[in-house]
Length: 160
Image (cartoon, rainbow, N blue to C red):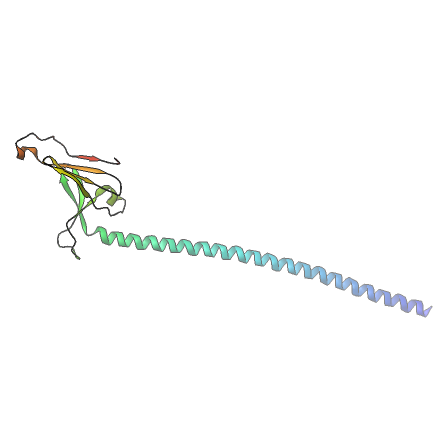
């Protein structure tokens, strides 16, 4: 009888150890699950931080571009190059000096520097073209000086 009781006690001890191991295993699995969850959140946070860092770099570049444009824009002034026709001309005495040129008013308004190129010239006037926005700008001479009559307007045509 005593060996049966001892055997029963031994069985209870083994069962108790098995239950403790199972409980510890359950806690271990919960711990592993929690660590996995934390790692997933860390990866999400790192991704968000990377996106924010990229956006900050983009905004810093935009600020630098705006400052550069403002510095460049200060070198020019709006000028009437014909009756009702406007372009931006280099201000006198600007440093460093550049050859005389005009910028397209349309492109200038979009913070782009596009030099007007002489496309055609005759006794009636000049036609300039902007390669940035494809505008044609006609500047007519005063035909009264040539003994004729003035067409009464200068023209500006966008997007030929």
